[in-house]
Amino acid sequence: MMGTLIQDIRFGIRMLAKRPAFTAIVVLVLAVGIGANSALFSVFKTVVLSPLPFPQPKQLMFVNSTIEIPLMDGRPFTEHDDGSGEPVLVVNQAFCRQFFPQENPIGQQVRVFFCGPAFRRIVGVVGNVRARNIDLNQVEYSPMMYEPIDQTCQHSLTTMVRTHGDPTSLTHALQQAVWTLDRDLPISQIQTLTRTLNNTMAIPRFCMILLFLVAVVALGLAMMGLYGVIAYAMGERMHEIGIRMVFGAQANDILRLTLQRAFVLITVGVFTGLVIALALGRVVQDLLYQTKQADPLVFSMGVLFLVGAGLLACYIPARRAARIDPMEALRYE
Amino acid sequence: MNDTNNTLIHVQDLQKVFVTEEVETHALSGVHLDIKKGEYIAIAGPSGCGKSTLLSILGLLDSPTDGTYVLNGTHAAELSASQRARIRNREVGFVFQSFNLIGDLTVYENVELPLTYQKMPKAQRKERAHAALEKVSMAHRMKHYPAQLSGGQQQRVAVARAIVTDPSILLADEPTGNLDSANGDIVMEMLHDLHKAGATICMVTHDPRYANHAQRTVHLFDGRIIDEKEAGDTL
Image 1 (cartoon, rainbow over the protein chains, first blue to last red):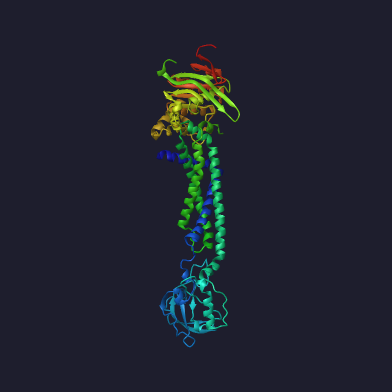
Image 2: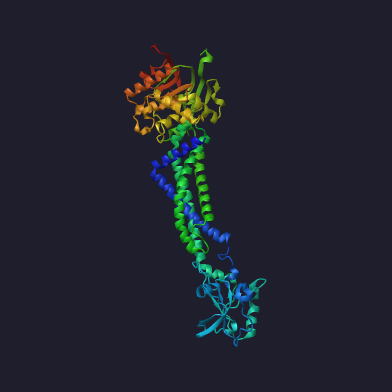
C-alpha cells in the first residue's frame, strides 16, 4: 500500500514536471487563492472573532474615576488640586519610561506649556491608554500628561459619563446637567463611546470591507480556476485512465490515483501560496489593528480551506472519471 | 464444442446493438463461438464487421445487448463492474493496435501496471515484469519511456504487459496494424511462440496473411460469422 502510494506520488511529480505550463497555472491559481484566503481570514478573524478592534475599549478615554485607568504609583487628583493649589500632573507609564527611565517620577517637577510656561509637580503615575484615537500603526503608547480640571486653561472640555442603561436616553439629562452649571456653555456634540470608536475606525473599516470583497472574489476565481484546470487535466488523462481500467484498475483505484496527483499539485501550490500570503499579510497588517503578519490561526484556516476546496474540486471530476466506461475512456485521444 | 471442460470461452447467440439518437446499428447478430484452452484463433473480416466489438465483449470491456458469454466458467452477465475489472486483470491480456502504453510511465512501469492492481508485493512484481520483458527481448529498454521506442518495440512492450499476469487468454486487436511488415512479422512470431508455450490467443486482424498464423480463423461480415476454417483448410 505504502509502496503504491509512493509510486503514485512519484508518478504525479513526474507528470507535473513534464507539464510545466499546466503546473504553473495550477500553482498560480492556488497561490492567489491562498493569499486571498489568508487575507480573507485575517479580516474574518478581526471583524467577526474580535468584534471590536481594541481589546479594552474602556481604556479609550480618560476620566479618572469613571473609566478606571489604573493608578500605578502616587495619588490621583483630589478636590484640593484646584486653582489655589500647587499645579500638579498625573503622567502615564510611557511618559515615565521616556523622561524618567532611571528615576522615581513622583515629586519631580516638569516644565509644561499648557497656558504658557509653568512648572508642575508629578503626583501620580497611571497606566497607558490610547486617549485620542486608535493609531493603527502605533505599536508604542504615547507619553501622556493629565491636569486637574480646576487647573486647566483649556477652552473646551470633554466629559465622560458612565451609564447603567442606554446612554443615548440620557442625552437630555446631560445637557441639563451642563447648563445647570452655566447656561451659556455650548455643547458641541454628545455621542456614545461606540460611535466615537466607529468614527475613528470608519476609514480602516472601509478598507477592510474592500479587502474582504476582493479576497472573496479572488477566492471564488481561484476555486473556479482550480476546478477548471483539474477538470481539463482529467480530460487529458482520460485515455490513460481507460488503459488503467483495461488492465484491472477499479473505480477506487482511479479515484485514489487522481486525488493523490491532485494532492501533490495542491501541496506545491500551497507552499508557493504561503509565500504570497506572507507578502499579502504585510498589507493586511498595516490595515488591521492587532493583526500579525504571519498569524498561525489565519494561515491554518486559509490553507485548510483551500486544500479542502481544492480536493473537492478534484473529487468531482475524479469521481466522474472513475465511473467512466473503459471503452469510452480508451477512445479519448 | 463438445469438450466443455476444455472450453475457455463460450459465446452463444451474442447480439450487440448500438443505439444513437435515430439509428440502431447491429454490430453483432447471433454470434456463436467457442474457444478452447490453448487455442490460437483469428477473427478476420473487413472494417466495421464487428471484429473489435466482439473482442471488447470477450475482454469484458463491453457488454452484449443479448446472448450468453461464459469466460472460464463464469457468466459475464452476472458480474459487477469491479468483478469484471478483477477478471480482466487476472484472466485477460490485451494487445491493441495503437499499443496503448502510458507515456508518463517507463517501460518497466507499464509492464508492472497490471500487477499493481493485484496488490502483489514489489519484489514479486519486479521479478514478473523482468521475466515478461525478457520474453519479448525488451529488458534492456526498461528504463526508457514509450516515446523513446520504435513502434515495433512499443508493441513488444505491450505484449509483455499483456502476458505479465499470466492470463488465461490473450486478446490482440490488430496487433500489427500500426507496424511495418518487418516489425509485424516479429510480433506475429512472438504470438506464435507464446502459443507454443501454452497461451490461448484470440487475435483480430483484417490481414489474411497474419490470420493464417492462427490454428482457426473465424470470418465475420456484418456482425455475423460467415465462415470458419482450421489451419491447412482452403476456402
